[in-house]
Structures are given as structure tokens and as C-alpha cells.
Length: 195
Image (cartoon, rainbow, N blue to C red):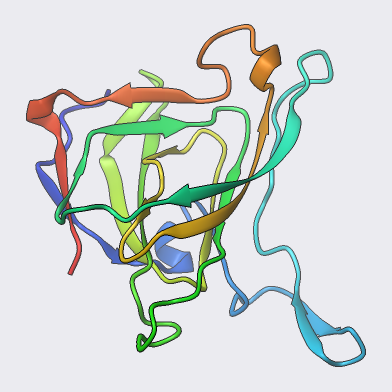
């Protein structure tokens, strides 16, 4: 780990610009190429995320399209106790749960995203880059390969996420080959403040 993590950070609304050092925000409002589709009944937004698999042909990984069901955190501020990364693969999460009744479609805080860059010298989290974001139910995230992040945290309700990651799973030769984890000691837990 590079330095000690901060005692607390505030979560900001998720934006493409703010999240760019860590990956991509997946949403229909992306300023990517778009075109009419399906005989004019849809708008298609292309290349909204960069999907990567850095495994070689001699050490192949398979795409794993799966669903994560996340229960909401029982308390805020949220205590960050660990970070993980997928060194060889990007990983995207797209929520599949509608917003709470009565909330604005694009304004609710559906889940929390915590990210951190990698220190190239120590190959551990660089806590000077630690950021937190609140995402809506109409935004997905794509973590760049090697990006340290916290597992997904739902905020207001049980949320299902469609997830894509390249993994070797049963063919792993090293225990943390697909997913490396770094656990913080109790005195270094970070409070993530959500307004």
C-alpha cells in the first residue's frame, strides 16, 4: 500500500470525467457515436466502454457474464475495509433494478462506487487517488483492468447487477489470479460519506 488511507472521503456524483482515470461510465447519455436502430424505434450508443482481457492464448480466460445481487448497506457512513482488483480484465456492472418509487429517474443514489489507482512501484493501492462516487440506477461502471475498487455497495434497496469479467476460475494456477484483495487494518478503515 502506498501511504496510509485517509480517515474519510466524501462521495461525489458519478460523472464520466470524474471516473475517467479508473474506467468508463456506461449510460445512454454518453457522447459516443449514436445512430437510429430497429426501424427507428431505438437509439444505439456505440463503444460506451472499453472491454479488455489481457490474458494470453497460452493462459486463456473466458468471459463470465453473471448477475450479482447486492443488499443495501445497513449504515452510513460506509466503512471501507478492503479493495480488490482484476489485474488482467476489465469488469463492468450495469444495474438492472428500477429506482425507488417516487424518486427522480436520474437523480437517486442507487449504489456506491469506490476506486483507487495502483502504485506502479509497490503494485498496491495508491491511496492518494482514492475516490468515491454515487451512481444512479441508469449508470453502469466499467473498471479498467488493474483498477483497485471496493465490491459493489447498494444504497437504498436490493440491486441486481449484470457483470462481465474475464476469468479462469477453476483453471487458476494461483489463488488470487482472477481477483486480488487488500484488507485494511481496523485503524485504517475509511469512512465514505454519502450526502
